[in-house]
Image 1 (tube, one colour):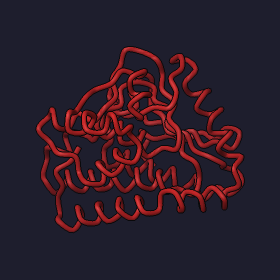
Image 2: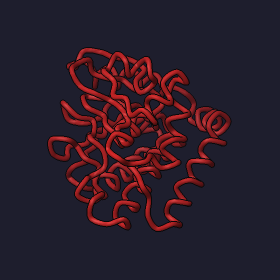
Image 3: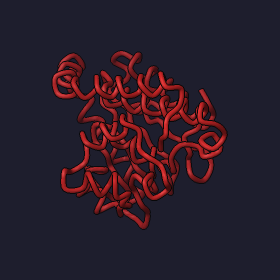
Image 4: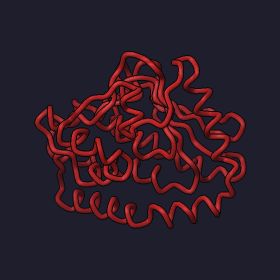
Length: 236
């Protein structure tokens, strides 16, 4: 696992932290590290009941690594598809995944939140949202699927087509966050929330995820497979 992704187990909660420079960008190594952390959490048996994904103070993530995105269509497509696959894994996981947003969550950083069961955000002067249209890019189909699933219908069009950026309180109304707390309380609150989720019987949780999300998961997987089949993606 990359040094930019670390995990601490606390009271049956796997707390995974992204620490990859100022903006916590999602590079191929970071996405692979997050994926490995989720695999380890899912394989932890009774020792791990839920997972919290967070970032260092100031940023959850500023999105996919622009140096990779600008290097070639093939590299960009591979990174976007790998990210989409990981976010889908979170959404479909057999254990609850909680997002702890410590600051800016832009583009793929916001999509990471959309893949989590419940999202706790720090109050503060930062922004969350899907900025792609404003940057001349088009969200991949899998990203639209996640946004359609999790965002308020009142905000879906302005958040995706309109590329609106939100404050933490407005992001809660839009559907990127479920709760906003003081910055120094965000991790502890996310762990507290994760403990509640962890008490659900795993088989029942997994069964209800399949019942509620199965159709959307199939569409997400199909969209990612289509992107990979084309060899590139115009993405986030």
